[in-house]
Image (cartoon, rainbow, N blue to C red; front, side, top):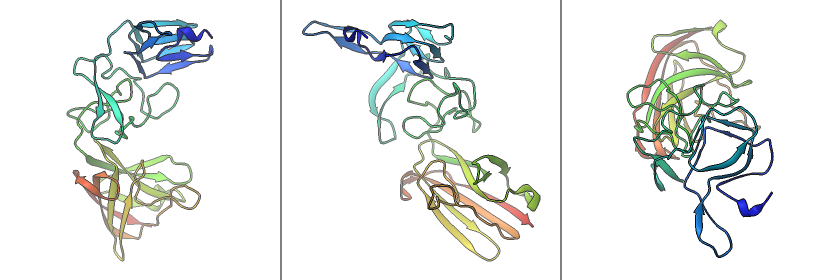
Length: 261
């Protein structure tokens, strides 16, 4: 590798892949010479759902579904309701909704489940249903902190089991051997407080680890299971902008459901 060709992305090998990324606005100074713009140098084997403004990379395959020679239209490097510096996307940025059209976090070339700040991918302005993710480290959209649904998860495999809605009847056959309840949320959420009112007991659990769950981690780092009692349950989850149930409380969500074993 000729290090005089260094850039924002320096691809050392033919196996370098770029997915759901923005490479833009990088400058290089060689020795005492003047600065010049170079966003990419080297060989890239796959370039998917990404953007390079000034490309000097060599694409070594036909796996190219991104944009080159396009301005990213980024905001300044700032804290945007999070604890990390990130460039926001301006309203006319081509990176908006430009990521992979797959469920975030589902593997392969899909975008990550959360952006650099911990905001869930697939934010939309007027819908609670996930949309297409944005390219890069910043997910734009409605940043009102809100819990909007609950679902059962198998704690042994981490797999989704079923959604929980108000009025639902949950039968023994609906449940895996070990299970817990997680939430879906949007906006900047660093902490969720769960309050479960059951026929013979009440549970409060504070969770500061994404993805947020009614039960915390066990000694092995896995999700602890819960055993729901027979009868009626009311579960409420309240999001907070700072860990430890501090900062601003967002919009909570409550469901009432019945369990029959």
